[in-house]
Image (cartoon, one colour):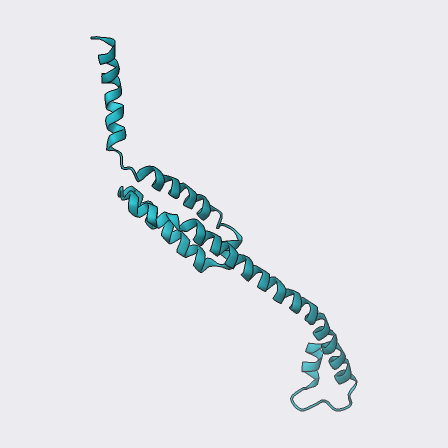
Amino acid sequence: MTRPLRVALAVAPFALVVACTDAAKAPAEAAMAAAGSAVESLAGDAARYAPEAVKAVQTSFASAKELISKQDYKGALAAASDIPARAKAALAAAAAKKDELVKAWGELSASVPQMVSDLKTRIATLSGAKKLPAGIDKAALATAN
């Protein structure tokens, strides 16, 4: 055999494999990789503060993976292309919910000491009273004290 014929025979199987692959496979796999990293970023606070949004993104990712396994690359590309944006929205929703809860906790932690102080004052007033109001007996006052 001549050298050009050997080279042609060696390159022919590679050329057939490349020609037979779906043109949408590479973009679909790239979109799935981006979607996979976006789904991984949802672990932690996002899952705790925005579980519905995280669940929706994970469901979309699972359906895109299923499409890839069925070799429906165009469908997988369409399904996976919006997953990073939805994951980003879920992270933003989780951050907003966390900020809201932190603010509410700050307000509560500022008001609870005042309420405790007011209760102690009221219990001290009731302890010094000669006659207790209706519905309060000495046992309840002792328990509160």
